Image 1 (cartoon, rainbow, N blue to C red):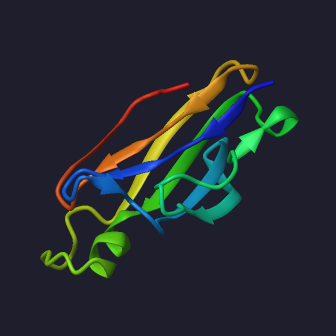
Image 2: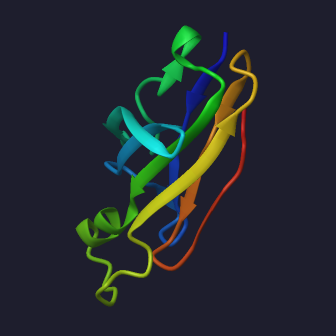
Length: 117
């Protein structure tokens, strides 16, 4: 059975991003439904998979990270409005029997992601 997980890395400071708010939505016919509302731990990871087993279904999802709030809490001086604020990663799950790891690598001015396992 597959699972969905994430973690956040603060590459501006070279460390895991602790206490970043994370929301997971299922997207069906353009409508978003909140599935999970959590935050990262001191290692920049969520304490448990976001979805696993039968809860992970084929379909479209969005992960939303409160990156701007994270950097503001760490005293990073950025202009208002923030250039990077809420980062949304829209992705699809084709085979729910596989593991999907969707990390966020972020600075106050850039971000990237990739599919891990």
